[in-house]
Length: 77
Image (spheres, one colour):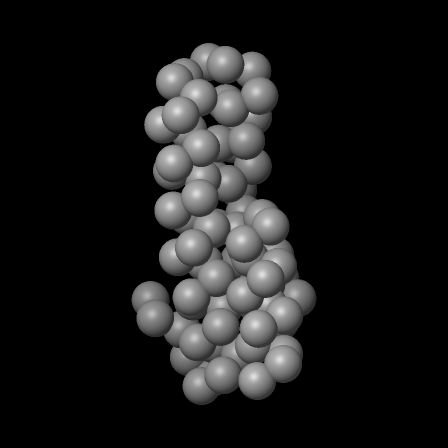
């Protein structure tokens, strides 16, 4: 249970980090858009509130997926 909570916490920091900690390449599908959204947020190219909302939604989804993978051996996707 502790490992599953740890990888979920990593994914809340940056989507995909929990997957990468587990050694799963599918984390790149979460990490690349997450870094792109942070870039958009910091540069102000798009509405910052919308960019942060999408970033947090992606992080929460990735956290649930990483938790499920660490706990049950398969993700929710």
